[in-house]
Length: 413
Image (tube, rainbow, N blue to C red; front, side):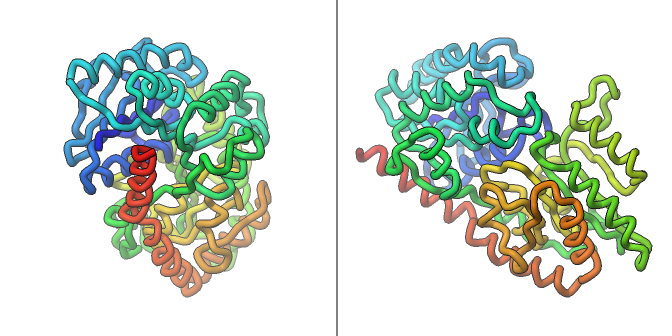
């Protein structure tokens, strides 16, 4: 079976925490790797953002590869400018397949922009197309707090087009399927629910003292960790406000704790900083947190398990998550999660068993849960053990089998 996997706007090999890099990158990369393990050949096509990178990379193993396709300027472009080049992207994939004499049995596209190109390939090759959206424009319009966070109608129209032309849509959760049905009118029978997986060979419990030593955290320091893109929808401001409350209330043990934020680029000149990063840094200053909040910027997947394992708790106070892969990775490392009850977080976090839910924008409630996990080591360890056990059911070995079954049904139909 040969699969043409489309990740148009972002490369699965990119370092997490940068512009437009996050859970989808991990998803595409890991899905491709584990498909290779079961004998499925995958070429992942992504738009070239650097003319000096080789067109074909075999970093995904099992002869599965990433193919960088020039489409428009070979530089980073914001997503609102990328719709102009989807046709060129698709045409050059067709050229690549013809020159290499490769026949693809199926197209699997990720995010709506990939789906626009995928429909061209599906029609040209006469093959089925499987689509995964990862996030939905109408949901972002509902929860966006600023005009910048709300999506334009061009995306909504594009999503509807892709939903109509795809043969099968993969939703990460039952909640996402309901959103597809209620907001976009998608037929219930067209949607399969397959959650993302976690690589339990890479994300697994590491002794906390060993993990802290590996990344330079002093023994005895209590760490809350955030991993993700630096944007308002992630709710990092609520987390910072909660840390200020913890600082004020934790006089009994002189507050040997701090918050580590992975994502974005905190070292740019203040004039060039991401607007949200600048706002968060100013908030830390205004709350007098000083060195209690550490912005580390991007980190590779190789080091992330040590950060997860070193933390007492991983916090995801998001307004919107389609799934929440960071939570799943943290849990696989034996670390409890405090999160908003949105998207896949609603099924990953089990209240009082693998972590806790907190109301959106409620810094006081978050501070109470942070204090509980900072001070109660026995309870924290129990939650961590439960989390690691629960995460194993989401191993990529299990998830890939479900995906292959969908592929096979599509080919039979």
